[in-house]
Image 1: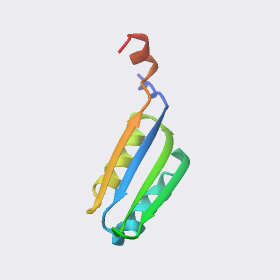
Image 2 (image 1 turned 180 degrees about the horizontal axis):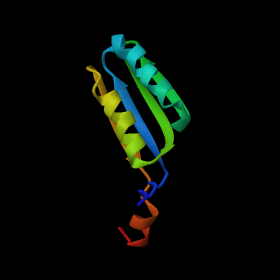
Image 3 (image 1 turned 135 degrees about the vertical axis):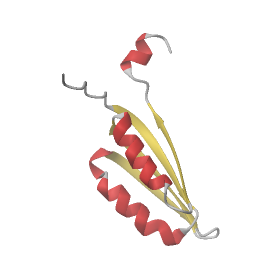
Image 4 (image 1 turned 135 degrees about the horizontal axis):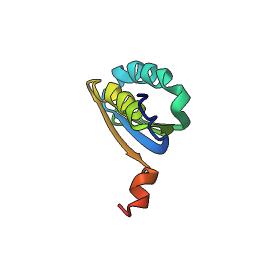
Length: 94
């Protein structure tokens, strides 16, 4: 029996880089998932030696989880994401 394909959803990933020495690693991971990214904004804060990156994405829960998990495992990097509800969730009024 074939496993059902997960539903693609639209979402946002917010990344705060508190240790700028990790920026290269962050960008390397972002490049690995570039096919999911539909928009990107990056804002450096030179006074505080940190940066914020916002990504608009399309993908299923598994893809997004792998992406954010890799980013979140980098020391000095904070990651939060938000996704649209699935059609099943919306149909049930949740």
